[in-house]
Image 1 (tube, rainbow, N blue to C red):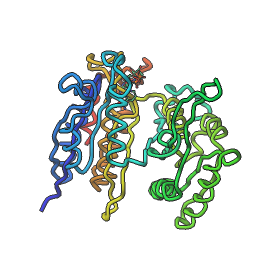
Image 2 (image 1 turned 60 degrees about the horizontal axis):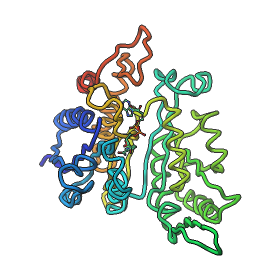
Image 3 (image 1 turned 180 degrees about the vertical axis):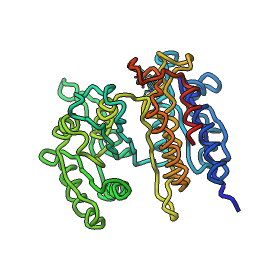
Amino acid sequence: MSRSHTIAVLAGDGIGPEVMEQALLVLDTTAEKFGFSINQSAHLVGGAAIDATGSPLPPETVTACEKADAILFGSVGGPKWENLPPAQQPERGALLPLRKHFGLFANLRPGVCHPALTHASPVKNELIPNGFDVLCVRELTGGLYFGEPKLQEERDGETVVIDTMIYTKSEIERILHVAFKAAQGRDKRVCSVDKANVLQNSVLWRQTAEEVAKSYPDVELSHLYVDNAAMQLIRRAPDFDVLVTENLFGDILSDEMAMISGSLGMLPSASLGGQKDNGLYFGMYEPSGGSAPDIAGQGIANPVAQILSVAMLLRHSLGEEEAAKAIENAVENAISSGLRTGDIYTGSEQETKVNTAEMGAAILKAI
Ligand code: NAD
């Protein structure tokens, strides 16, 4: 019997639907080629859902996601919904509740600067002659963003604010396991990032990293303080393989990595929940960038991040590794052949400027 998978497709706003169209074409072709079937259904999320139903995350959308093996997400938000109260805004009202509902605790953000795109990076080219390929593994459901108490109050005539950084050892262990397992499929090096010289949280983090590392003798573990990590990423990004860190540090470092990679339009991301008995994860897969309102509707967005999100989905949630690799190779092929959407185009003679559909078609052809 042929393999069958179910995914919920949430294209969202801005360039979301434009790049999603290309990603779904790639998914269909890959499924056909590698002999599995995909049941996909599209659902409202973000601003589009607010306009249609009044809510950025309608219950029907959540129900559809619950029935799926994975969520393929586009992007949400835009100027039209910017003035709504924070909790009703597309990002806050859809992304955070989805992460919470599905316990998506592990955020995987590849920071890849393709060797042919080093010119797009703000880092001096002599520091990244062959680009780089770093995977940032960020804890996504703990730490300062969710810790209680979280409040503002008046004390003795002074306004006081409190955020709480809290982690349990098991939360730290499970994210470290994700990082070490990911490293086993890569260059087998994990750099754990903390602030153990100042934070009690980080002292436990570092101890736990040392303990978890014992289960992965094939993987080398190193540690960096977060301030130093921020500097070293710029000075020597090619030296890193997998970075693992807690929520706040990961939020900042993964954005720094996206910036030095050159184009947000090239970078996918995965947010994973618990691991199932078969080793696969329920996950939500989306581009690292947002809805890019400045170029939405023009058909010029780079579809690569959304297409590579499909590759991550196939790998981590559906166990279709061969199909995932085929997509990654096809993207590599399109970039190596000189095709460039506007965000990565420099005007050099070796490059051909293409739009969203043309880039998608070239990747499809390479598959
Ligand atoms: P953004 O990532 O949307 O855009 C930043 C810059 O990167 C823009 O110049 C944009 O054109 C460019 N860019 C992003 N993706 C691209 C692509 N695929 N191809 C070519 N260029 C691309 O960030 P922003 O401008 O800060 O936010 C815009 C909206 O997106 C806001 O409403 C924000 O809340 C929302 N947002 C959503 C998500 C999400 O859905 N996960 C993430 C970040 C921002």
